[in-house]
Length: 185
Image (cartoon, rainbow, N blue to C red; front, side):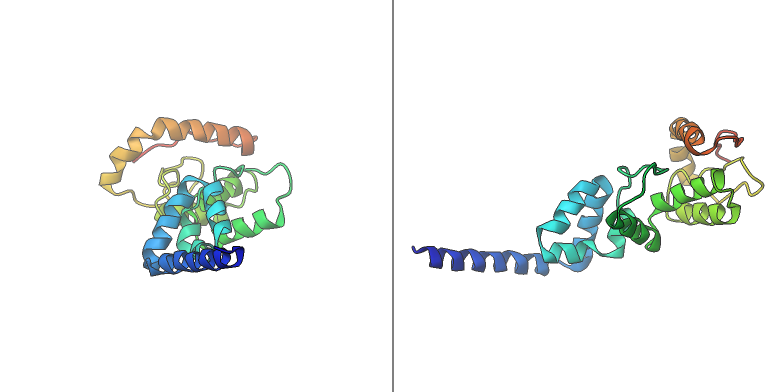
């Protein structure tokens, strides 16, 4: 087998792989990408870099709604790169619940932008963000959304964890703010 013919075989195989990926329904592909993105920003970035087809699939709004923001600080200490800013803008545009929750907390405690904070927290809660589902006793608008009964047990189990998060966020962004613990109605 000559070197030239081997290259043709490899190119044919590469085309088969791409066509195989395209045979998977787009909804299923997006769901798989969203699950990868929910667990690891690094993994979804690597998937996007692997081929054009996967990059296109990973640009689905559903993927951005579910992507993990664990690698991003709540309050940035240095300016973000253009790529990071573009990424977070897409998370905002497509309604990533974690992004909305973080923005709501920062707007409330640091910027004193109450209307923006409540809107972000309400949107995050409507998208199922566990922290935003809690009743927060910090302001006059106490309840962001009504919590379904079946979710209350799940939420009550996580109250301790959320109160710890609340204290950490208070230390980072709430200098001078006063806030009681989160409670479930």
